[in-house]
Structures are given as C-alpha cells and as structure tokens.
Length: 112
Length: 113
Image 1 (cartoon, rainbow over the protein chains, first blue to last red):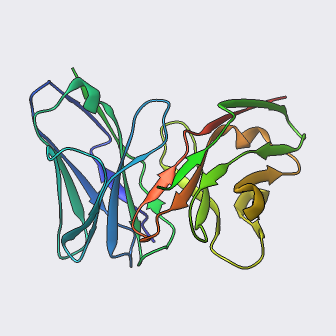
Image 2 (cartoon, chains in turn cyan, green; image 1 turned 180 degrees about the vertical axis):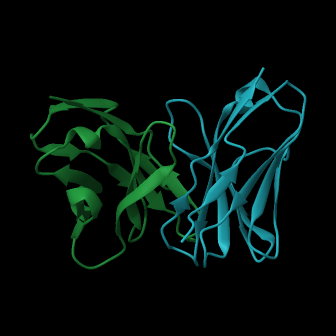
C-alpha cells in the first residue's frame, strides 16, 4: 500500500521564478493538505483540497495556489519566489475531517 | 485561536532512560491532539492521537501520552528510550473545523549511549 508520494525531492530555483510541486495521496484518501516547514520550525498550514476545491486556507499569500485532480493527486504552485520561500514543503493526505494526517517525505525547495 | 507550545527545544537522554516530552495547547473545546515524529530528511510519522475517551493513549514504538484537560497538556512518554528514537517530535492540535492542524515548534531528542 503506497503512502503519500511527493516529487521532486529537491529543487533549486531563483528568486522571481515559479515552481510546481506534486503529491499523490495515500491509497483511499480523498483529502490533501499542504504544509510549509521552515528550518527549525513546525509545519505551517498552507491549504487543504477536497473534491477538487480549496476547502480551507492558512495565512499564506495568493502567490501560493494549488489544484486537486479527479484522482485526488494535488499540485502546489508558488509564483514570484522569494528567498523566504525556501523550506520543506510537506503534503499530507487524510480521509474526512478530524482524521490523522499521513505525510510524504516532502520537497526541499531552495530559492537563491 | 488554537496553538501548541512545546517548551523544550532540545532534550538529551541516555539510552534506556525514561522520556517525557511536554506539550501544552490552547483550544476552546475538546481538542483533537496528536504526536508526530520526524527523522532527518523525512516526513512526519504519526505516533498517537487523542480524540476522546481514555485520557491515556497508547501509540506505536512504545510511546504513550496523557491528556490532562485541567493543565491543557498532552505530554508524550516512553519508559525506556532506544537510540533509534533520536528524532524531532511535534505535538499538534486539530482545528475546530477539522481541516487543519496547528503544530508546535518541535522538540529535538538526542539519545546518548
């Protein structure tokens, strides 16, 4: 049973560029959440997708956008990258509300 | 708003010794509480969760946690630590809508032989 998979594992971008991160949820899960984890910090909620719609959003600017596909996989897009966007981006899947999150290993984004 | 505080940034214990990691939460209703562990370069793995019922919950890898409403705490414990337990530990509380988790800043655990 495959868990949550994320790609790529590492990414280096230049300030001002755009990036797309991808996530496939755990089999049977229908909800995908994205978190940003800065170095030495806990994960911060970006947004959650369910039935191909953004269900809830954290305190992140509109430069951060996402999408969920009919097969429940998801993408996170970040435009106009800033140095401060350098972080580990974690995708988590779940089934329904209040259920535990299952995390992927993350994508390490470095903005130079 | 919900929040989580993990007062200990870093803890060092000897292998075989007992462990307690502290977690305090801020939440208006019955909280949904979780402990996760993160090894270097890895995602977060769920250790245990509390939704309701028995305030002492058992998790994987021999961990347990006790929910104390009067103290707004959900401390993680293990009777005998193994070297493989060295990792970063995160406490989290679920939002009242069930859509997002609020994480603490984590406690880094070092295990010495």
